[in-house]
Length: 186
Length: 73
Image 1: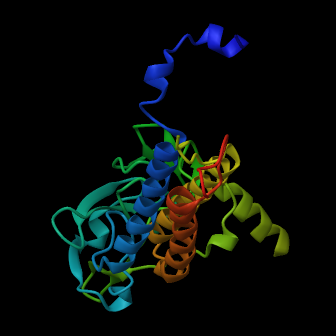
Image 2: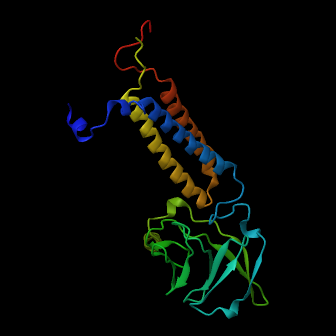
Image 3: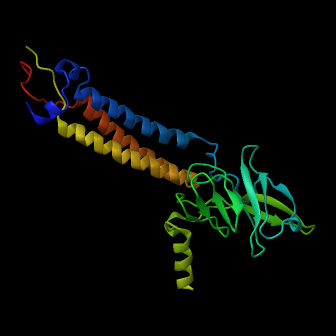
């Protein structure tokens, strides 16, 4: 009797209930499931939650966000952009710049919030910088979806579209790496 | 007496490797789609379909036998 038969004393009759061929067939069906999943993603017209809408572009339907002057540095405000479930966050950075991002964390989809000069995801302590939405700490590896803003002459602020995410080849594992390489080139 | 045709452990290993590749491919494609890069979907679907066809062929049509062959085979 081999050592593993002594360690795992299974009855031979029970072993026959699930053959190697059946297991292989099961794996092949799981493989078909992956292909079906990719096919469904391809056929799906509506973007996934938290994903930018390529159809929207910079000319998407504008959403009024109130007066730009109402938001002081360090403050933030939530708004809905694409539909009632598309939560976004508008913030004014410490430098006075207005930024807007989709509120969905790119890790597991929790809602990010603006705190102490950066966007934080309270679920797993992921942090994003506010200039471009790059992850700087924690589990997220992809940047937040950015919303394009427009300040009109009457002082009102509008969300006017979605900004494309930076190309993957420019993404380091952390935003600091990207910033450092950019500064080094300059 | 007919001996049941069994799949070889090597073939099972190949299917497992294909599945791991597909898992990685699916995860990568999902990340790309979440970043708005839907252009990768046709190519990824083609690659995934090819891997699935290979896995299905190996799982259902592989004729590798262990032990005695069938009489007359």
